[in-house]
Image (cartoon, rainbow, N blue to C red):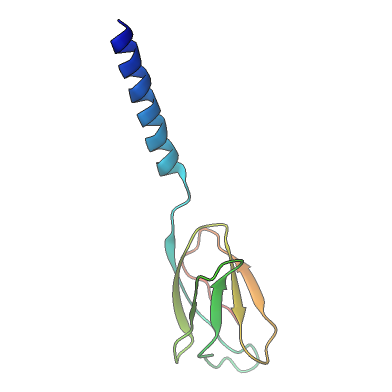
Length: 98
């Protein structure tokens, strides 16, 4: 009887751990484009970083970027000579910035 009780407890703990792992935030891919608000031209070389991390990327020659991030994180867009902009990652998978 005691052995069955221990097995049940072990199975419950294992099930709980599986649930916790599946509930944790999962990374997803965000894509977007960065353009100059003044003239609408593409901005290559813009730094796109997850705030308070070292995770980031740089926009391509046509201003496009792709990054894996968790919902609720903040992306920081910065470029020399421009004021940095921040955007919170919501449910959208495309985030364009001017």
